[in-house]
Image 1 (cartoon, helix red, strand yellow):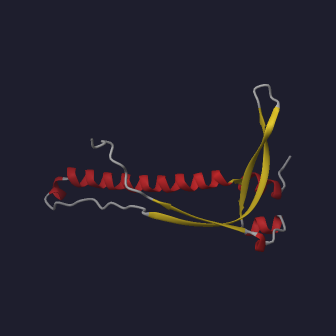
Image 2 (cartoon, one colour; image 1 turned 180 degrees about the vertical axis):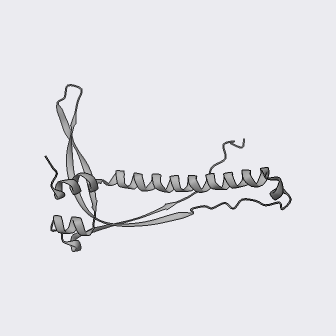
Image 3 (cartoon, helix red, strand yellow; image 1 turned 30 degrees about the vertical axis):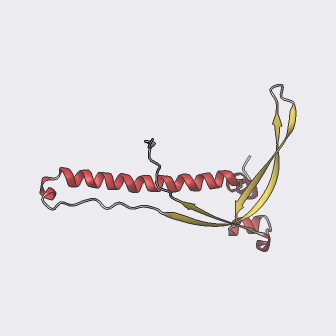
Length: 135
């Protein structure tokens, strides 16, 4: 049976807020890793190419010092059952779901944009700590 458009949007776009933030964080980390890998590969190439060694070149390193994120979204609270080992309902866990506001979501759900929420967050890099503790 084919999905209705609204069912697909609900299934694909509506996610727990923690999942959205986690995926944003993972994407930033993957981007930084790709930048680092590129710099390492460049330095290896500069160090092993005899024609380039005479120029004493160093690879450029790029760093994402911070990322500001502003998400406009529709928020909804749902409750998920928590069950014990005998499959009895022990309580309910609140889950905050978020759906990005775009033209499809707005029109399919007759959503009033004035009721939207804005989440602002900043992810800042910090220097790594030394692995050797001074005594």
